[in-house]
Amino acid sequence: MKRILIPKEVLIYVDGPELFVGNDQVGAHYICLLSETSDNFERYLCAPISTERLSNFNLGQIDLLDIITAPETGELFTAIIRDSEASEIPLHLIDIADVSSAWLPEKGFFFVKEDLPGELVVQESCAKNKGIVHLALNPPEARGDDTKIDIMTLADSSKIFQNLVKFAYKKSLSGLKPDLRKKYESADNYELEAYACSNGSFKLHLQSKLNADLSGYAELFRAMTKIDELMQLAEDPEKAIEVLKLNKGHLIGAFKKFLALIIEKNVPLYYEWTTPQHRKSFRKSITKETAKPLYELLLDTKELDIEQKEFIGEVTKVDIEAGQWTIINEEDKKHYSGKLDADSPVSLSGITAGGIRYKFICEERIEEETVSGKEKTFYFLISHQPA
Amino acid sequence: MDWAEKLPQQCPPAEATQPNNTAYYRYVATIPLCEADFHSHRKLFPLKKFGVDECTANSLSVFSNPEKIKDWSKLPNFKGKKLIEIVLPPESGVVIKSGKENHYSWWRVKNFIPETHKLVAI
Image (cartoon, rainbow over all chains, first blue to last red; front, side, top):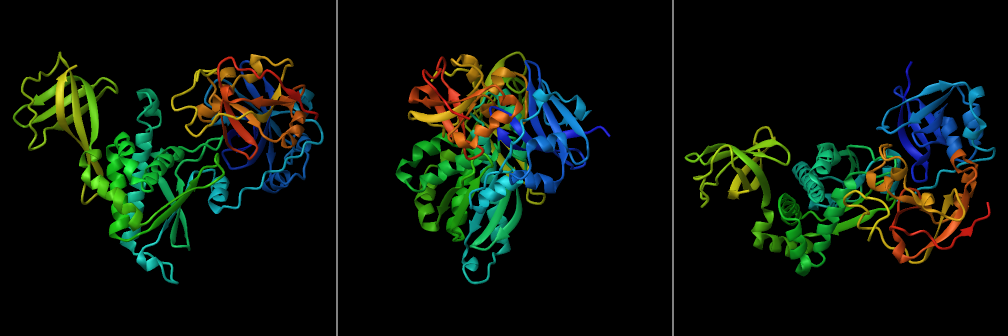
């Protein structure tokens, strides 16, 4: 059987993985040791290891040399990492007798996996190798002896929080160059899964869809630090406007809905989050009383909700009467279609399809279809000029 | 700051801070110290992607507790290397605690090589 190694957890990291644990395609564990480095490749010696033996190794009870030279199955493998993606690495069987002594650890190397901090959110994050959020909702019905929550409150809260995470993540990417932004655009990077709930208000345990990478970094970090930045504003609403302006668009719209939920349904909320890389929790809380001043500020500054998009390129279709247009955006080579708002003062007359480059500034609106719940994006032209 | 290596966007992270003449520990191949002892994994392997985010791949690993890493001299990649203590001043770059308890990621400024170091007995 051709064995493919999937790295799972780094035990020792120094500029790169030195000792790590991986699985093959049928779930067998391997412990892999960096044994040789050259200009072109890194060689790891990988020994199959049972769950029990790995646990004992992590408790400092087994010499690493014995793990490598006396594997339980009698087999030893090498994994060569060259200049390429190394998410799935072929394993090559090697005769233990052919292993150079220079590739082996010295006798007497014992490893003790560090104790994790006591916080449950950190333990779960490290055990699962994912970004974790514990979201504690405290609506009126959850405050008695019986831990319960109205199903619609639970549904609304979950959806509003997921949307907040989604737009916080997208906003965090806005400073990146287009090709790099495209790399991180997948919904998998911000989508959450609920895996448990617990007492203490009604606490949802949420995890990032994707695993953290080998350094413990999870993309959820981008979204949650952005949300923390907004939550901080509730503590000092006077200074909030500048930060809000920097984050204008869908994120502010989502944050407004989040604050509205807390106020209108009287759902004081607390969350703590972490990633395997951080190993400590970050916490924020908000109540109806602390949310109100910030919410009122957002109601007064409606333009903060407007998500503007800029397209530069040639117009391929223009229908002056219907107020509709299509442009090819040079940055991503995609076609974008839109229209004029009913009461818009902007006119499409004078715009020519083909041959002339234009700069279109548009408002992006996302609407949810009533029946399917699917989201559709619409573009409304705010202004245009030759580019 | 003028970084020693070309860093990706939004790197180093905003949470990273300048060290304050803090002692850290690192294995090095050569004494006296040279630039090559402070090359990141990304500098050594420009094209390799090994399941680590790009910002981390462009950083250097330093440690706060030598007792926890002394034994690593038994590992193949550290054989023949020396464990040293270096004191990082604010102008050396920025650091952030990351991953396991003892580990810090250091983004080094251009041309900064620690002027002095102390050898740690293993």
